[in-house]
Image (cartoon, rainbow, N blue to C red):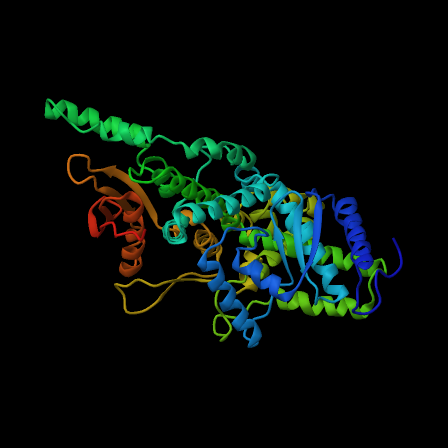
Length: 508
């Protein structure tokens, strides 16, 4: 298609349609991307702030924390301390992309390329999203969750529902299955089965407490422990799942609320593991599409300069000694790695052929990248494809901060051994199995006070923050209904520290 898509900053809905159709021609026709059907929504600044508060979801249940986030973001935005995102995109089918009404025509083009085709392709094709999320059912399930929680507020009181959700949200990061032991959540089936679960008769509760030992202590105790571990699937890392199934004092509606929070935590879990890849993919896709639009004369030189200015801001990475530095910008790292891999595919050096032989000189960068987008997450992507050249360009090196030593130690520099150490250490920072605390339910004291016992496997001497651990443990005790004990143990299983909590009085 030749000819300008727009001239100037103004746009109309007809312009948006033309932009979408032309971007689609390039994304699907030339790049061969595979996407869900697209739905573009134009929203106001206030609606964008509301989307921030509700975790980017178009439908969500009510909770005070969402309102708190809205007020925080709105205050920063009104005072000029914070800009708004150009778009929000939902992993659903159809894939919903929310774009700001205040965007110029060029920015609408950019965000459609970025969200409606870049993110959309990644959502549809990456293995984690295919295994764990149900894009076709999430919107219906969110509507069910919103309606069900509103019904619970009317029936049992807002304070009772709010306190339950407070506890569930505190445990949300410990409410996911980290390995594919179960099939992905089918949200339509979940919605259909919800009514059944409301009449849950706490069968597991009755069976659980029937395992109290009696008779010959030695033999029965061993049998009871084995039976308990089998029944409760111990050790269990998904704490919300464990509580939903076995907490003895929860009513059926409370179990359903835990299930809702748990399923939404599982829905977002792939996004936590693919931030660099997801944003890198979308940024690479929009960069290729916008360049192609300029080559074909679909946007003016002035519009292209506007794009380059915005793109440069998106992929800007402040240095470690820059006051603006906070962390590694996932857009910057993701785009840099995608562009570097394109270079390796087209113009490899001898070093590239040694480090990335599977890609070097293949002369098909788009298909090579599509295979990577489909089969990796951040940790494995970085550990496999971060090249020595990019490490040099980014001036990466490894420091070791040993509390037993008075100085920092440079552990890895730019040599063969150093590159491998840097890449390995950097990749671990994106491994949730390394960065998130490993906490499991390991036992229940059936002989005594029915205390729930958890264990934190401490890595590299990193203990839990005492105050935060105490607060979260208090929520856990509320849900369990009996005392809770959390033991922190080192790599050899030796105890390092213990935390305890008692259930607190709940408001009626």
